[in-house]
Amino acid sequence: MAGIKDVAAEAGVSVATVSRVLNDHPSVSEDARARVVAAVAVLGYRPNAVARSLRTDQTHTLGLVISDVMNPYFTELARAVEEEARALGYSVIIGNADERPELQDHHVRNLLDRRIDGLLVSPTDGGSPLMLDAARAGTPMVFVDRWIPGVDVPVVRAEGRGAVRDLVAHLYGLGHRRLAIIAGPAATTTGRERVEAFREALGEHGLALPDAYIGQGDFQAESGRRVTEGFLDLPEPPEVVFAADNLMALGALDAVRARGLRVPEDIGLAAFDDIPWFVHTDPPITAIAQPTGELGRAAVRVLVDRIEGRAPLAEPDALPARLVVRRSCGEPPPQQTPPQSQDEAKKLGVDLSVTDAQNDASQQANQLQNFTSEGLGTIIVNPVDSDAVTPAAKAVNKADIPLVAVDRAVNGADTTALVASDNVSGGKLAAESLAEKLGGKGEIVILQGQAGTSASRERGAGFTEGLKAYPGIKVLARQPADWDRTKGLDVMTNLLQANPDVDGVFAENDEMALGAIKALGAKAGKSVQVIGFDGTADGLKAVEAGTLYASVAQQPAELGRIAVRNAVKAADGEKVEKSVMVPVKVVTKENVAEFSG
Image 1 (cartoon, rainbow, N blue to C red):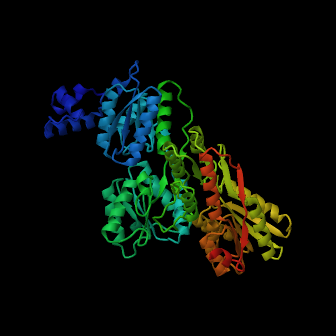
Image 2: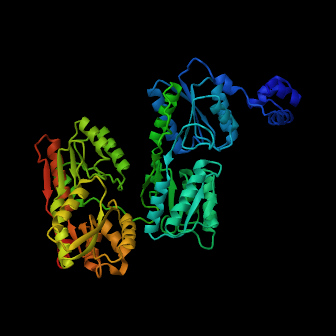
């Protein structure tokens, strides 16, 4: 194998000059640099940084080369890596490749020269001989987020295909058909994978991805701006642009606003890689969230296992990404907190601070953590997910702050009180009302709420119990739609394909019922009867219009008042009832005026 002296002889320069070229020293002339680079290529020389890195003594230092430190995703990833490494007794040296392969290899070479114990890399492309040599030489290494095909190195990454599929189904349910993508670099695995996943998901809905709707970006904001300008100039611009990373999404948003257009009124926008800023944009941006912190922590654990001789035999499982629905694609606005809750708080002389989780369990957990750190007198929570809220609820318990749950229970944590509608009785009422409307016989489907929530469990149980008195009613299918109107439309559309002659629908809340009505079209309220739950303003309008046969009405104002009363009592150290059930009532066209006034 050629050595550095052979390179110097081939190039006609000194060994010192070769060394300076290999270490990117600026003092070398362009002519000498070109001759050295040519000699390296001819001789197949590989710098000995890999060999020098193989030491018998440990430095308890890890190297991390990330693709772009300006990208908030990689900033969060680096922070998680540093925190986990510190917890395991290691320090971290970070190199920023700035999405440039030559700068990536420069950092890798320097880190190996510094005698690091192991290396974490998010590769900028798949053509780095240096990393291939390092892997072959036995350098402990882990790829994170991206990887290089053919290099035998563990990969810690997120599985984004399912979330992309959910996004496309969501957009399709909103009525969008012209969907475009700002792609990442084709040289990166994530750049290729996200385009492939998007194309496959479109195909599942019978949609194509024409070349005009694929814009080549580079994971930088400027490319997002440039590609979006091209989309807007098309004779038929897309209805929604999906940016394959967050910086390109911000660039796309700039391009739309520069034209005097609005999101989502004129064009929708969605992104891969959720960031905290997206909650604060106007409108908040619908995005695919990766478990960034866990990716960083898992990568460190895998690398340290390899360094310390505990390398697992199996490839680490990919961590699931998830869709976070906000309002940048034409989604309906979230329901507002009943003003009666604020009125009750004022009457009792307390301040009520309200946050909206937008049906996002992770966001709700962060909000609970913030309230806990503020040391509030009591916290009231309406759980998005009864299980997902548990860790944050336990932190509230640990801080000795009373916790009042409203509408849905918190699983696995202590609550001072649960104030909820009598969901079981409501489910029974829904079954009886729908069965009577169908004359005691017919085939129905059920749209379920989010799995794990007490409201879904109790409403479903009550409905099942109520149907026992009507053996002529057959349940064809039960599918979750997660309390969401758009998902209700998607699920109902799929159910209709398998069950075109269905007679009735029970949706465990009005939002899903409204989605089902949209899927049913002219059948709603005529050949197919739909009953919802909650008695929301939009639900009652549908009852008045005759498209929704009935809704089991909760009393949100009363729920809010009772929750506030119990929260104030708990803060004052008074005893409160552990469970308060508020009655419900079936609302039909005959009595809807009593509830909608």
